[in-house]
Figure 1 (tube, rainbow, N blue to C red):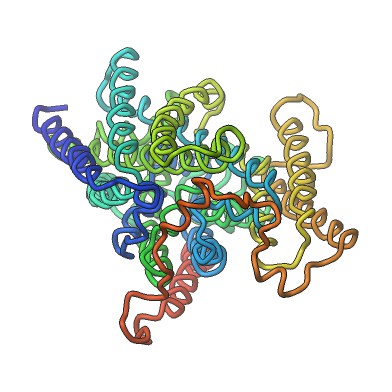
Figure 2: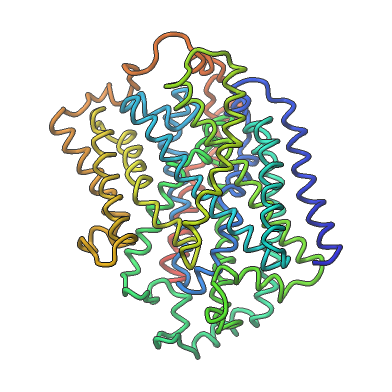
Length: 557
């Protein structure tokens, strides 16, 4: 890169990190650190949701994944993202918000018992630290591919990036994270638009891309134009495109519920109206950026048809940056990638350290200390969480593409846990059903993982354990176990299901109970009078859902 590129990178990313340290000065209490004092407006949260959802691993791996597998992955960032965000912000998280909880795992104790709360925290820590591993590896690939750094230089810069991110996150908590994310999202959008139009121009535009894809086939004879059509593309197993869309949809639906990096933001909203509008705004930003990133992968079939023969698909994004970006623009794209990494580093670090402190440490290890003590534990836990991500690197490098590594882990624990949240809020299944469902769903997930990844010959029917069948099958197994538990122990009375029970919650005054008293009164909306109809989130949600359905089953089907 030129001196101009480096100046842009250091100026943009350095300014955001410095701003994070500046904001951290205002954090003094538990509600400040964990929930931003429940004072965050919709537009700031929406930008933060976007910055957290679109990380550097997505930018680097999505182009490579689309190069090999076509457009169907956009389901996760359009239809699944919108429906998951609406489900979380309109149905699930308001229950947590009204209950005065700090974490999504905390809710599960009142609904299903203390053990489920702890298991949920552990699952989420495993789930999101694996994402940290993907991000770390994608930064490594980018530094090697774009900057031509040596391995030692790459890892040194990555460690410094983690240290600086951990520093302002541990000091400032959610407030610092959200507002730095908001600034980083602008850098990410600028970088994403820059490289997309560079690749678009190099490919000759939409008409030229479609024509060239129509005239070519892959080594197995499949027309490359199928890469642009979800309903026509055939993978090596000839999987039904409807099943693939269902799989991505389940991943996206669970993302906004079994992921405290997002629920933590929603629970920090200044009102329920802000919570709903934030998710819709975030999704509105996510869709075009991720569709454009995916299209760059398909365009690679025109620009570098021989790419798979000389490099791994995850190297396609760095290749684009080197080939098609002029000085100055390359620096903007690198700054955007680093911003994506920092925004998700701080989000995951703050969210998972909150889960560790509140749902594990204060519940089981030390439940009678001062607020200062627990904030100190949380800050140190943030550093530990960020370091855990490095442990996943050996697992990730076994796969041709990072998304494949991430996807294979989801049905083991995350999908069963999502089913438990969903039935806990929407049904009257008994408290015992949570543990029963989790044991059944996770056992099924472990067997499927062994069958897919660890043995040479398939042990079970592909209807049960194959990578795309695994998602709906996992939900069905978990739900069936919970319904059988309801038959044995009986359904909760309607009033008992609506009012969160406190049988297993610590009754004496501890930091966990005292900190909940700090929360501001629940606000329905920021308006002094009733919400105007033109600002009713329900209308915007319906429009966004309709658009996302059209994108999948119309535009790209």
